[in-house]
Image 1 (cartoon, rainbow, N blue to C red):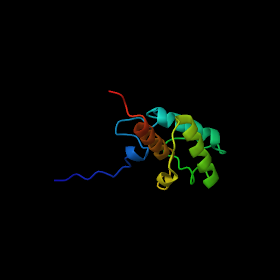
Image 2: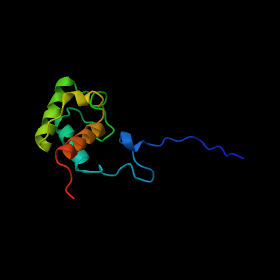
Image 3: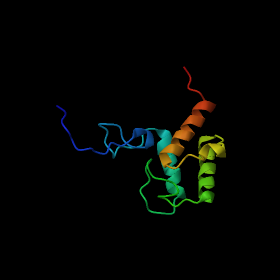
Image 4: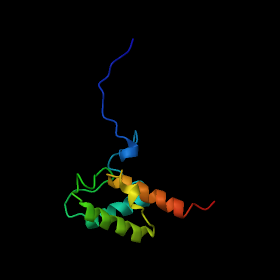
Amino acid sequence: MLHSTPLSYTPDPARGGTAPGAHSSAAPADRFERETIEIVKRLSRGSVEISTRIELMADLGFDSLQVLELVGELEDHFNIAVPLNTLTHIRTVGEIAAEVRRIVTEVRPAQP
Protein backbone atom coordinates (compact mmCIF):
# COMPACT_ATOMS: atom_id res chain seq x y z
CA MET A 1 0.00 0.00 0.00
CA LEU A 2 1.29 3.45 -0.90
CA HIS A 3 1.30 6.11 1.74
CA SER A 4 0.62 9.56 0.47
CA THR A 5 2.51 12.43 1.93
CA PRO A 6 2.04 16.07 1.14
CA LEU A 7 4.30 17.45 -1.55
CA SER A 8 6.87 19.87 -0.32
CA TYR A 9 9.17 22.31 -2.03
CA THR A 10 12.67 20.99 -2.57
CA PRO A 11 15.11 23.67 -3.72
CA ASP A 12 17.10 22.84 -6.84
CA PRO A 13 20.86 23.11 -6.14
CA ALA A 14 21.51 23.77 -9.83
CA ARG A 15 19.38 26.95 -9.65
CA GLY A 16 20.96 28.26 -6.48
CA GLY A 17 18.85 26.27 -4.02
CA THR A 18 20.29 24.25 -1.21
CA ALA A 19 21.08 20.59 -1.36
CA PRO A 20 19.09 18.21 0.83
CA GLY A 21 20.18 18.58 4.44
CA ALA A 22 21.95 21.87 3.82
CA HIS A 23 20.97 25.02 5.64
CA SER A 24 19.59 27.79 3.46
CA SER A 25 21.47 30.43 5.44
CA ALA A 26 24.82 28.90 4.48
CA ALA A 27 27.41 31.16 2.89
CA PRO A 28 27.93 30.96 -0.87
CA ALA A 29 29.73 27.77 -1.83
CA ASP A 30 32.89 29.13 -3.38
CA ARG A 31 34.91 32.23 -4.11
CA PHE A 32 33.21 32.78 -7.47
CA GLU A 33 29.81 33.05 -5.81
CA ARG A 34 31.10 35.16 -2.91
CA GLU A 35 33.02 37.59 -5.11
CA THR A 36 30.25 37.82 -7.72
CA ILE A 37 27.75 38.63 -4.94
CA GLU A 38 30.06 41.37 -3.62
CA ILE A 39 30.34 42.93 -7.09
CA VAL A 40 26.55 42.75 -7.61
CA LYS A 41 26.03 44.38 -4.18
CA ARG A 42 28.32 47.22 -5.15
CA LEU A 43 26.49 47.81 -8.45
CA SER A 44 22.96 47.31 -7.11
CA ARG A 45 20.93 50.40 -6.38
CA GLY A 46 18.40 48.63 -4.18
CA SER A 47 18.37 47.25 -0.69
CA VAL A 48 17.59 43.64 -1.65
CA GLU A 49 19.61 40.95 0.12
CA ILE A 50 21.81 39.50 -2.63
CA SER A 51 21.99 35.72 -2.94
CA THR A 52 22.63 33.28 -5.75
CA ARG A 53 18.87 32.96 -6.36
CA ILE A 54 18.30 36.67 -7.00
CA GLU A 55 17.46 37.55 -10.60
CA LEU A 56 19.43 40.46 -12.02
CA MET A 57 16.57 42.02 -13.98
CA ALA A 58 13.42 40.84 -12.20
CA ASP A 59 14.60 41.23 -8.59
CA LEU A 60 17.29 43.90 -8.83
CA GLY A 61 15.86 45.86 -11.75
CA PHE A 62 19.12 45.76 -13.70
CA ASP A 63 18.79 47.20 -17.17
CA SER A 64 21.01 46.23 -20.10
CA LEU A 65 23.55 48.94 -19.24
CA GLN A 66 23.89 47.68 -15.66
CA VAL A 67 24.31 44.11 -16.92
CA LEU A 68 27.13 45.29 -19.19
CA GLU A 69 28.67 47.18 -16.27
CA LEU A 70 28.48 44.00 -14.18
CA VAL A 71 30.13 41.99 -16.96
CA GLY A 72 32.93 44.57 -17.19
CA GLU A 73 33.49 44.46 -13.43
CA LEU A 74 33.57 40.65 -13.46
CA GLU A 75 36.02 40.66 -16.39
CA ASP A 76 38.35 43.06 -14.57
CA HIS A 77 38.05 41.27 -11.22
CA PHE A 78 38.63 37.75 -12.54
CA ASN A 79 40.89 38.78 -15.47
CA ILE A 80 38.67 37.06 -18.05
CA ALA A 81 36.75 37.89 -21.22
CA VAL A 82 33.05 37.08 -21.12
CA PRO A 83 31.56 36.49 -24.57
CA LEU A 84 28.27 38.42 -24.54
CA ASN A 85 26.45 35.71 -26.49
CA THR A 86 26.96 33.31 -23.55
CA LEU A 87 24.90 35.58 -21.30
CA THR A 88 21.60 35.25 -23.12
CA HIS A 89 20.37 32.43 -20.87
CA ILE A 90 21.60 33.88 -17.58
CA ARG A 91 19.08 35.32 -15.15
CA THR A 92 20.37 34.81 -11.60
CA VAL A 93 23.45 35.83 -9.66
CA GLY A 94 24.24 32.11 -9.22
CA GLU A 95 24.11 31.53 -12.96
CA ILE A 96 26.50 34.40 -13.67
CA ALA A 97 28.87 33.08 -10.96
CA ALA A 98 28.73 29.63 -12.57
CA GLU A 99 29.54 31.14 -15.98
CA VAL A 100 32.50 33.03 -14.49
CA ARG A 101 33.70 29.81 -12.82
CA ARG A 102 33.41 27.97 -16.16
CA ILE A 103 35.37 30.65 -18.04
CA VAL A 104 38.11 30.87 -15.39
CA THR A 105 38.44 27.07 -15.37
CA GLU A 106 38.77 26.96 -19.16
CA VAL A 107 41.35 29.75 -19.17
CA ARG A 108 43.34 28.44 -16.21
CA PRO A 109 42.82 24.68 -15.85
CA ALA A 110 43.54 23.23 -12.43
CA GLN A 111 47.08 22.00 -11.97
CA PRO A 112 47.54 18.31 -11.04
